[in-house]
Amino acid sequence: MLRSTTPASAYAARRARIAALLDGGALVLYGGELRTRSNDTEFRFRPDSDFHYLTGLREPGAVLVLRAHAEPRFVLFVRPRDAEAEVWSGRRVGPEGARDRFGADAAYPLGELAERLPKLLDGARSVHMPLGRWRTLDQAVLRAIDGLRRRNRWGETPPELVRDARVTLGEDRMVKDEHALASLRAAIEISGHGHRAAMAALRPGVGEHQIEALLEYEFRRRGADGPAYGTIVGGGDNACILHYVDNDDVLRDGELMLVDAGAEVDLFAGDITRTSPIGGRFSAAQRDLYDIVLAANRTGIARAEVGSDIDTIHRACLRVLCEGLAGLGLLPEGVDAALEQELYKRYYPHRTSHWLGADVHDAGHYTLQRTPRPLQPGFVLTIEPGLYIPATDDRAPAGLRGVGIRIEDDVLVRDGGPEVLTASVPKDPAAIEALVGQSPLP
Image (cartoon, rainbow, N blue to C red):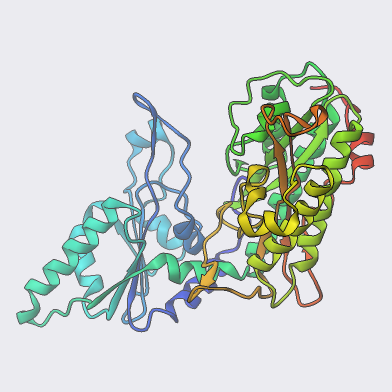
């Protein structure tokens, strides 16, 4: 799966769907560029998600032009083949490969973009592009439009509108086609292997970095491109830091470990969070808090049905969390007051769900005209309630201070009811306790 398993026909079908939305316009996307890690070294290249979604091509600097108004319809600009450069930095597809391997109707060296782009945009009613995402692309398109304006007296016709391509692409990406869903399922399956391995290797004295390494080893050895985002391994109070990625502490007996990690397959992301007892057993206080979060998680999943919406899911989970906190004495103001005044944010500062797909926080609107959009079959979202009790919280019982718990599942919305794509990863406390410490670290 390190190489794409998505057939060329799937990318062609996506381009056809998008072309039908362009209304005589053109779409221009940039594949992205290498990013400096330090001095003269770069991070491993990951293409722009929208660009890859329509092409499958993973190469820096490439530009896609998709035209609904004229032939050729699908045009790629790529780096030319260069034997000397390829010895240093890897093989290039070249214009011929862009045509033969990636189905481009026409392909040209990247250096010809400035010359050819005005001709490709001539007569298009509008240009769809990711406004503000890539300065290189913004400048190229604006120069092309300006040139067409100046040559209008000779019959060239500039586009009259510039539209944000992220809206066009995001709406298509919201409903997963069969190949997107297959890639997503593979990413989630591999993510699950990593989480189960992390639970099995958990024991006091292990470093957070060792669990991180084990997770990412499982992802890579099973064919994923790597982690879909920065892996979070937080023991004890570190779990109360929502985006904790230092992973440089030691896991201590009597505390909990929160792991938020997902694998990326063909640029689709898994996203799973589980919380486990480092010593193998939840304390009574930890179990009380865990059961509240688990109840909220299950309540949210049950609401992830066709016609519901993310706000409805969030409110349902909030009520369960607030009722549980009130029962523990952490919301003395009462449930209704806590909900109305958002007092719960002391312990639950984030939302419950986000879209999931080619980006871990995937494309697509959450609201339409200020109204939460109804869930449709083919949407995939997370359900991830949590509770985080800072070590400095004097109102909390001693056994809950420094405890952070989050339980996150990936859910497919279907006509027959929600499908939990992450169901293979234990979240029942007894099942987690049975798995913890069962395998040594490799």
